[in-house]
Image (tube, rainbow, N blue to C red; front, top):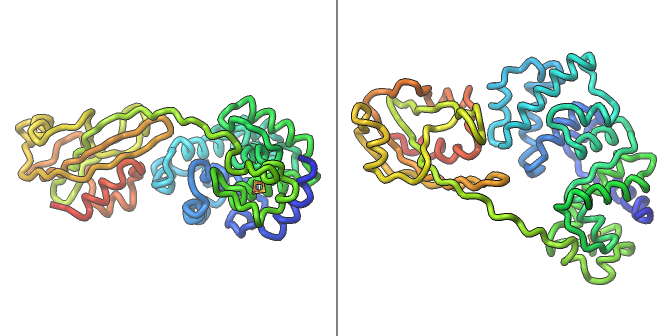
Length: 343
Ligand code: SF4
């Protein structure tokens, strides 16, 4: 691997993308962007990042922000525990480090929501600590350059790759970590799409020399996701819709539209509402499938016009949702549908 350091760095300095969080090496900026980038595309993150920084420009502001407002800013990014952990970590930094982001990997990795990869990225990029940051991109580049038939989902393999890369980290570990990730994100793309012809490592890459770049690393057989079925109720009254906080499970404490297990028929929906709240109109709404890391929610909906509000729900207007309530991505298509179809 040592042979790739110089050409990779040269390529990176000439080609690195101009990203909003690369304007400086402020750990707050790198931290927030790294957390946002987990499970989310760079293009989608850019706008969220700018909005976040305008409203929450530093650790102190983050530590004091109301959770509801934080979740509203995070709305659409999904995996809301990331946002909650950001706030927990900010409070910890305020209390234990006088509001100054810790410099050592061992301290950073103990902050809520920060794993080995993120700690390595922050420590190396912001504080020039010789730490590795191994993600899927790095593992793919490594597997191809070294022509190794590895399973990138195996944690032991990840650790071994980290140890190999640790040995070759140059004096600018942050630049190296960013460079190899950038190569994986823009040139050494997954599956059968690497752009070897324009790759700075073309002459050094064993997989390319032996025409194996499209088959390495080994494809990971994904486990089937467990499917769950739900019926979602879009209860409409007086130009308002009913929402409630989820009590448990996935998306706990997030706002949602009332729902129940299984797919209900219109007759079953009326029975679920009870005679007192029998709808004056019932329309079968859209269906939507939302995919989580380990689960798949299959949801169908009903739009129901009520003559009086059911107590215990929060009744909110479209504008109030827009301004104050964070609706998880899984339910956003239903919100959009209700806005367009109001009955
Ligand atoms: S030559 Fe191709 S396979 Fe090798 S590192 Fe570059 S893009 Fe990846």
